[in-house]
Length: 427
Image (cartoon, rainbow, N blue to C red; front, side, top):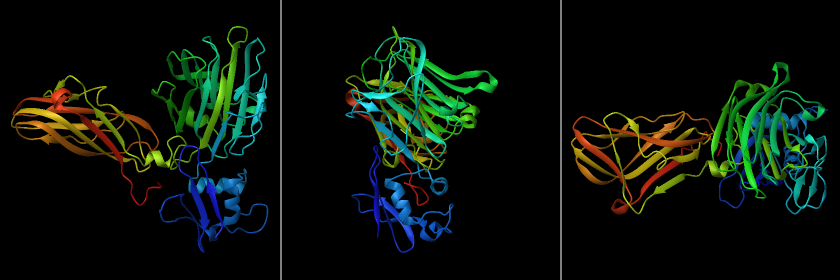
């Protein structure tokens, strides 16, 4: 049986083989059983220019990817995310020709990128409005684009991430993603020359360090873009033009606002992947999507939150927990915390996110002081989307007072978010 190994920079290696009937995969170094992916019968096409490759040809494509029409069709049908990545660290000075993952890089602009000192550098012209661009064909609609970069000046040199509707190198066309970031701010726009150019969808400010590697990543699902900023904050941009005007190309740009005083940033790493709706974004890959998230909170002194008789947020910023929705779109949320209930009724609690709310659930029904725990099913989120989970609570009827207590003599409060994985989940 022929085998090939697909290596992901951000997750475990996946090994492929063919059985008598199927193309199969499993995670390298594990005892996981081989999983069927594609029946070999479906891969045997009629000889000719449009023939679908055999499983041996698929194995060759895994290690030597090419943009064939047949491979595009297989990617689209079976949800393989085709990742493109480049790391300039340690590379010899010279031209920027191809991604580490094999795709050709198309360089264009006022000046041309080159590699210098382990970074992707735009030559400085000391002129205003000068840009350099690198473009990659992902073979499928963009689902993620990101970069590691550094700023060399506190002035406004900009890194721009773009998802155009067609090849940008052939002339500026509409773009569903046109995201710019500079030392003191960022803006997510879409670009449509037919309706007046750039339109801002979301923007913000920050204060980023100079000469320090920084990461930014954007995940796109339909009309929603999730932005992971260098300071760790998660922001969202939502507009139907994000879906309508994005395409199969990823473009990285640096921009020299004024070369004399505002030199352009330097890019260290470029990354992107195409992602059908049921695949997993590159940075939040299968491994991360299948792991639980846990938060433990404690303090030297006691913090106490009174639970009111009308539902209200409890412990905002203290119990907030960031997580990524798994492919199943279901998670089990568990809370363990110290409470004090005076009276004989109930404390009703539930986890909430920006888009989903779990049913209220009683965690204590009589007078009590001590630790309690309970779990909730939260479901219906968008696979791959980052959200922050918070808590709401209220006390009912006969409870004269109720409190949540953390720290000091009351110990640690914990929140756990675990994905629900079923037989129909591609994990």
